[in-house]
Length: 154
Image (cartoon, rainbow, N blue to C red; front, top):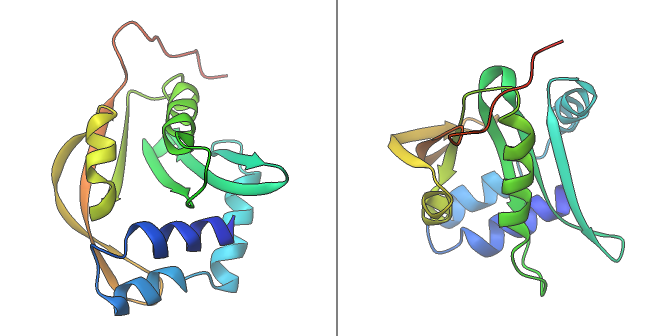
């Protein structure tokens, strides 16, 4: 997942951020972050989906319905196409069974992608990395689609 994340950042965000932000963002995989991600993967409330092809991780998505958050969606360049859209749709299908909305801090290069997929722009925010570097983003939100009823929480 780390290589998919790094590949996505360096390839897709390059035209939207200066090198110092890209370097900090792509390098923000610290032992603490890896440990936190492993904890999140083991939490029942986290939904984590991974897209693979021929044993290679192409991307992943993470949502936390209890906080109505889409925490991550990264897809590295690949010849398949549509992987990000499929991951987003799949993680939303599961999350919207448990929550009414999902919000995310969309990187500037991803705003159009989220907009096309039903997210509304709420306004600019700085997503602060563990290193303290601020990554300018747009806060976006999507409401659960009409007709999709949540499951009873057990």
